[in-house]
Length: 166
Image (cartoon, rainbow, N blue to C red; front, top):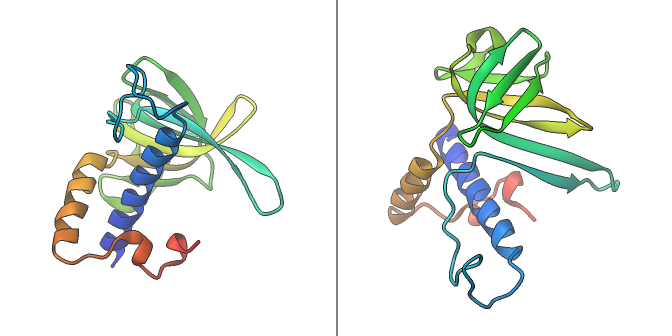
């Protein structure tokens, strides 16, 4: 069940990113910058999104995929394939998954590891909520989900899970 939820969650995240970015296109008229049809997105390297909770408070959320270039007990610097480097604060609330272990810690990470990190930004400070090494191959997860759906797996929106309820 945990595997199914992880795949469904990844599918929603990948689908959600595509939908949000495609909705940002300025017009329906094809152009070199915004071709007709669904967008073809390459590997996401990093990004930022602002969310608002029920109380109206906004939170800036960041994601980054790359390689750890520097690491201490309280921070790490991750460099993405295009040369962008962000430094992330690591604390007792940072969840780490490394080498397939769900109960890993910051000490299981090392410089040179490929990671995906997610967290929040306040001002110029990014705080990691979650780090995984190696990062998930979302393209592979997307293909697995397609294969599972052919076998009768419902669309994630059809699952009766709190994360998929409107």
